[in-house]
Amino acid sequence: MRFYDETSLQRSARVADFVAMGEPVCNLLIVGCGMIGREHMRVATLLGRARIHGIYDTEPKSIHEAVTEFASYTSEKLIVYPDLKSAVDDTAIDAIFVCTPNFTHFDILQRIKHTEKPLFIEKPMATRLDDAKSMVQLVGKYPSFIQLGMQYRFKSQYVEAFHEIRKKNSLGAVKTIAISEYRPPFLNKVRQWNKFNEFSGGTLVEKCCHYFDLINLMAGDRIESVYALSGQAVNFIGFRREGKESDIHDHAFVVMQYVDGISASFTLNMFSQELYEELNVTGEQGRLLATEHSSFTPGISSKANVMVEVEGHPAYRGTDITYPAPIEASGHNGATFFEHEAFVDQFENKPHDSANCEQGLWAILVASAAQESAATGQVISVKDFAAEQGLDEVLSW
Image (cartoon, rainbow, N blue to C red; front, side):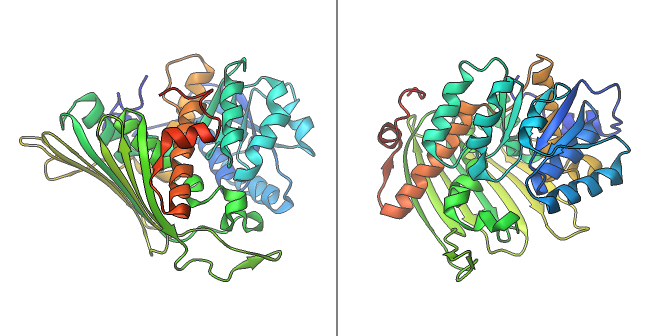
């Protein structure tokens, strides 16, 4: 199953009057109870196809917040494990979600892979390309599946855009792809790890692997070269923690060329007041514009829209494709809900549309090449860059 076989409106129709039905088919362990970990707890409970059996975190504050929030929307029992080993080795656990800071993903994988249980690992899969390579190699011999948290591909505007372009061929052959994100700065995280490249992997890896995943999927081909400009213009200048000064970038411009001639670009600005995403694709027959306006301000609802500038198209002037309010508000504008649906489908050996480790590696490879370009001022041959990183063993061109 491809995530764009179904339109966003079809997804909305089947969840418009959603009520969780039936018994959960698996028990989940959430490792890492920060903001994204709590979102997964909330969404899994809303979907109702899996049960949050237990949680583990090294931070007492995160545990307290997770337990308090969980009790606010369910009366289900929740186990708080004292250590990672007892958590992952509990035979009642069927699958594990790794929702910890980026730089811990690979280490935690090494400590839990012996369980051979289905795994969900939040994006980015790793902060280092050699660690990501090892994860791809592991997949080949891992008896269960590993799903990556690339939930932006489940956002309504991207589901609809991909359906129009890749399923219906509304634009004809794609020629250019442009994605932009404007948003406020990085949020507060435990020990402010996301303010430092060392722990986040860099802004283009941490925040933007979502978009490089989308561009790779839209292009449907291997990337040839990358050129980027990025920097730290406004956010966290002079911010220090434990003797280290923040070096995280807050804006970027990335230009990409694909082997079959498709040109692409990505623009990031992280010192805006509100959240705005835009996908602009042109083809032989016209243009598609997919947008999302959202906010971190409580009470402001997200709105997603798709416009298809092709003669005679019903969405020529645009159409609202926002998910139903309860789903939209559950997390990441409804995308996490459908990401969980894909996870349980995969658990039940049904067709699914989730991101795998190879796709995750391609996304952070493009991001890493862009960061290399920004640092050196050079156009980066992605094939050469991948070879330098020892990735030829796991990637095909």
